[in-house]
Amino acid sequence: DLAGSAGRFSRVDLFTAIVLPSRDVSPRYQTTVVQTDSGQVYSGLIVYQSVDGVTLRTGTNRTIRLERGEIEFQSRRSESLMPMGLLKGLEDSGYADLYAYLASLRK
Image (cartoon, rainbow, N blue to C red; front, top):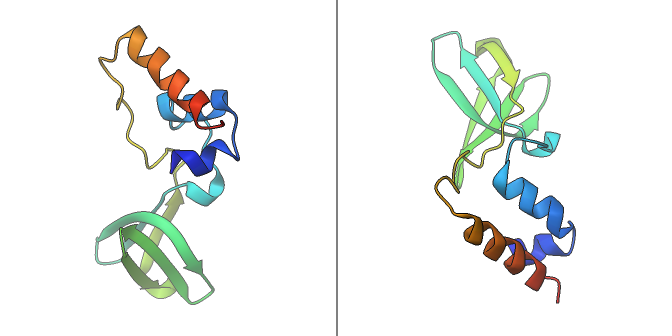
């Protein structure tokens, strides 16, 4: 929701986050990759973590609980969940329009 984000972030910060999504990712939104001892690999956001295991949100309304004993490898990634290159091929006027739209959200 860009309208809600406009109240919390500057136009420059929002523009940068859209154009370069992995430039500055809050730890809260960093993806965690988990590999189990059976070779399964899961990627998602940590919803809950304890000494017993990890719960990952791997998709919309989809979570998976992994017991600590079945986790072979766990790593946090600094890449954004937002794919790179969404604006690939956009001309300068498109970037200007995006910037103007972000400015309009604060009014």
